[in-house]
Length: 87
Image (tube, rainbow, N blue to C red; front, side, top):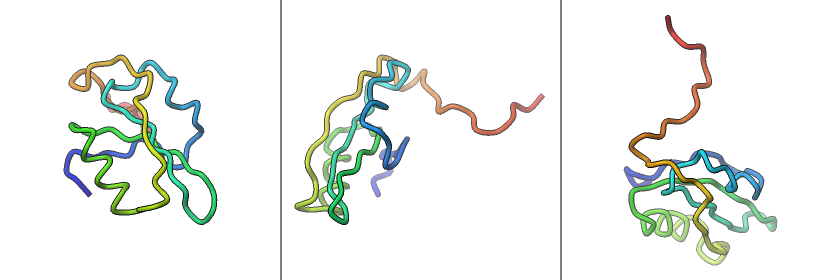
C-alpha cells in the first residue's frame, strides 16, 4: 500500500461521498469483488496512488473513482476520534 494512501471507509454506502466535511483529496472508489459492487472512501496525496493500488488489487473488477464532495483542506482535516478525549 502506498504511504500516502489511507482508506477512510471500506465497503461503505455510495452516499458517504456526499459529506462536505471530508478532505478534498478524498475519492469514492467503485469496484467489483466476489460478484458484488463495493465502494471505498480513500484519500491520498496523488490520485494516481489510489488508482495504482486498486488496479493492482482488483484488475478487471476496478470500475472507477470520482472525487467526493469534500471541501476541507487536507492539512486542516483530521479523522473523527473514535475514543474518548483525554483531559
